[in-house]
Length: 181
Length: 193
Image 1 (cartoon, rainbow over the protein chains, first blue to last red):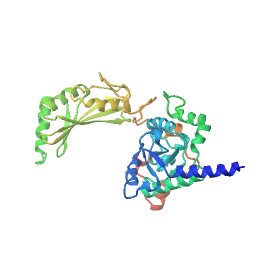
Image 2 (image 1 turned 180 degrees about the vertical axis):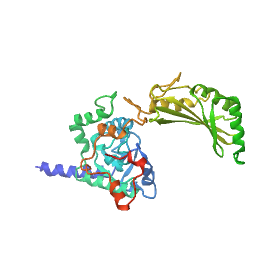
Image 3 (image 1 turned 120 degrees about the vertical axis):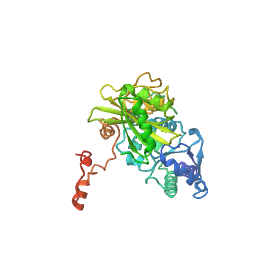
Image 4 (image 1 turned 90 degrees about the vertical axis):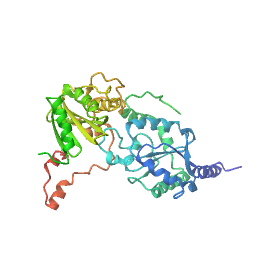
């Protein structure tokens, strides 16, 4: 008789190993940080050696990068994109604007705390983070995936009402479906 | 005092003074002329500048909020390719009932600038056609670029603060004491308390 708990451990290990080495990044730049993505992906820093590469649509992507400031108008689209992504899915907050508002902390149209609206697994600080910092953030995410700790998407599904409340505080005209996955 | 460098500018300014009696103007510097026009005459001045003085190109329409004088100032920035000169046409409008003439039949792209100013400052342009919403989405309340709109207060109400950052304080007083300088007057009104 096979020990179920241990065999599940082996399956989880294999699953996480496969997941962490093929991170498809949603090609969606929200702020000025998107300019750091081309050097990260191209030959000098070559993020593809870690299995990081671009994906064209949300359905094919694993990772959503929030690159820099997030306007309230963009937040609506980001939520739509995030919910269309298939689990397991991960979010990386990019730059100080996503952490505490950054230099737009008192602006009327950019949000200050990203993790009040969508769950964030890894934050990369800096304004802007250089490609080395981006890659180090991705490696941190890979470690979290291997340990099974990158479960923000589960947290989002469990606490959807709390997130919705925060989201609807900013997005006044909510003309989207309540569930889009 | 006519400077030799600004001779051509002076000629154009004199032409404008000949055609319109109720305008003020000056040559600000080389290749820059400023005009102050009343709201009712701005259309004819702009048309005259375009058709007769070769200011074909409208670079921008800018808006200034003079909160203390209870006025808005609209600045039409024109450019002449022939004479390589800039013409600033300024009008003042009342802040309580801000209505300005629409000029998008003179320059079609003025429509974009006017829609932006309508959204950001709440100035109505007579007969302006176009969607009410331009850059902002679902905006309620005061237009955000007005000076009496408090962005910090709005951001504190609407968005969240990262816990643990409550001790962030205004350190300018300490810096002034340390370097024995005085806080300039214009900076005092931005003080946090």
